[in-house]
Amino acid sequence: MVVRINDLVGNGISGILQKWVNYGRGWRHRWFLLQDGVLSYYKIHGPDKVVINPETEKGFKVIGDESMLIISSNRNSLHSQHQLKAFCEIQLKVSTIRESRSDDKRFSIFTGTKTLHLKAETREDRVAWLEALHAVKDMFPRMSISELMAPVDNLAISTEKLRHRLMQEGVSEAAIQDSEQIMRSEYAALQNQLLLLKQKQLALIDNLRHLEVMHRSNRLIK
Image 1 (cartoon, helix red, strand yellow):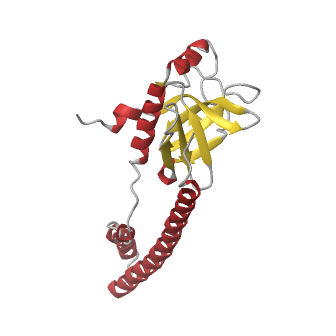
Image 2 (cartoon, one colour):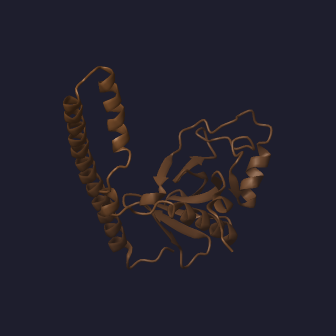
Image 3 (tube, one colour):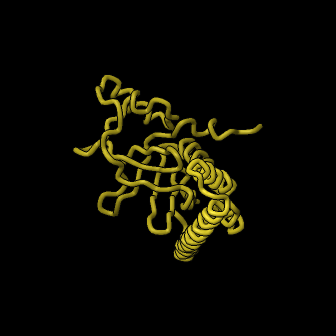
């Protein structure tokens, strides 16, 4: 049976998860959204809480019975969107997802610079969240250096537009060819600069992941 990404995440995932804050405050409920490769969360209590209702979650796949109860309890709310800025946003493509070995409701997400310790309301909810998170993360395969260095196919189209415009102005063929060559050279230089920046970015991400793994290699998520 082939499971499609839309079967798992639809237009997005939302629902209640408990987030570990610190030893003084312990676990706190937060409303999580997974959309376009980004996991974000909002407070649902206090002055900075976000109002969750059927309108705000329209089109989302909601995980958990408690999540559905919160939505139903705010059915008559006039709010129609998440008005407040998310307290945290995590890009899944640069994150590592790990489930707890000792608690079937818990899992963690590591970014290399930040760690989220999370707990679902039930074991089934954790399974649903992990399936969705892994499915979304798998949509962002790491590009190889050869792929990054591949020539851009639409470069000829860009020079054709330039050629057409210069011909309209009565520019000679020799001058047009010189202009095309200059444009290609400038583009190649820019492409090389972008490639170097991308290589540095990938190296930094790999180093951060390596440090995270080294730091936690002998520890279990309890």
